[in-house]
Image 1 (cartoon, one colour):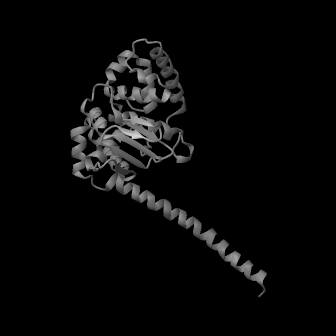
Image 2 (cartoon, helix red, strand yellow):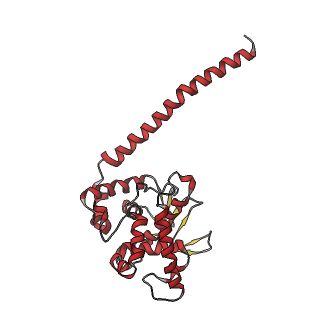
Length: 273
């Protein structure tokens, strides 16, 4: 047997392995993840401590029916499992921190099938406002897509929870930034989960409101919302969830566009379907 014949036989064996083995590998891989997802999403018992934290601290969760509470709980668990929570400046991470941060992300994405924000794998939690070497200024929170991270100051995060009707919520604000970036990031496998037609309609109405703020016309949204369209989205979602009735009375058209954008309605409790 010469060298060429040997190489031909080796090549043939490799080709057979690839033809027969690769589909089996793919099928096994897919089945494994389906079974794992079903286990965590439908069958694994929810830790009573997680349910207790949500019941005590999440008004959004409290307003869901029992079926949707169960869905919400499992999304929180899956979100927690998909992130690496890192305490900064000596802050010790607790179960409550993980649950409350995850619940904020799940809240704003609850109208979508997609909800885990896969681009962002790390969540940094600071005790209070912190200095960012990237922007060279102090922050209450920020989203850093290149670093695949979300940063939050815990004292300000808690302020947002402790006053659920003032339209200011750091968790909602930063998670909205993460959601918006995730929707646009083409290589995350989940971009475009916000319907384009809903987004275009919302953008048009949002820009009108930004112009009103810049002209010093009284608005339900604080001045910071007029910084750019991304900041407007984050600020408007704070108001959307915390001052729903006030938002609707102020601008019904923009409110309805936001309902379509997120596929949920805090006023109508469409999540209770």
